[in-house]
Image (cartoon, helix red, strand yellow):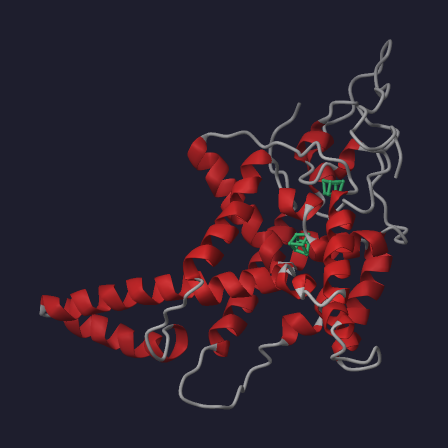
Length: 316
Ligand code: SF4
Ligand code: SF4
């Protein structure tokens, strides 16, 4: 089996750029003594169909309001292109790729795919929708963008803020000729852009951080475990992507090497065509495909697809 780069380089750049953009918008949400938000900090949430659905179910928005414009656009694009948002744009998906990969390297753990049935995420979506209809706003609470934003606000930014202020205070106290003035200048530059106006401390910091750590730790169980089996927004996009004509299929030149199955982060490539509700259009299967084996007795023959729990062979 050929092992090499398992994701198209363009995807890395797009994911990195969009995550950076999300973090930049997050940094602009911090209170800095002015009551005016001069950046479109809600931009990502305007594209979130789950947030619009949660708002609508809670009776806060008509189906024709602006909340649905961006969300409708994303649903329309998903119906045409599949779950590209999950593979290329979602800031939590990118964060899981980064932290999950780092964690696996650190612990020497292998990449694994989850063996749960494909209906788990839709079941989570149905349960959260029912709870929201009954007055428990769980749909909004477990929206992946809310999860990431909450973690950044309550846990990660306060930690970063405390650490950075500690370092700057240390530099200042050092009274070293070049170091102390350089630290002071850097502090003046960073303070209005990245540091908190006051001293942020939140009651739920620990719990929120632990919940996020749990989502990241699931990467050791399987790559993109949260995305394939728990995320309610992923489930919604997965349902819509079933209409997409864009399906990953094995070519007739398939050498049955299983490289695509091993590279696939969600397990979608175990089926042929790939399961549209799980495929995040990351391109790793095509990137990892091995060259066709030499012609000969049995050469190039496809091997039967393995059976997966909760589904029949080859179903898409
Ligand atoms: S499944 Fe959810 S968390 Fe994962 S990439 Fe898609 S929207 Fe983001
Ligand atoms: S089938 Fe291919 S494109 Fe789809 S998620 Fe798996 S590796 Fe990515």
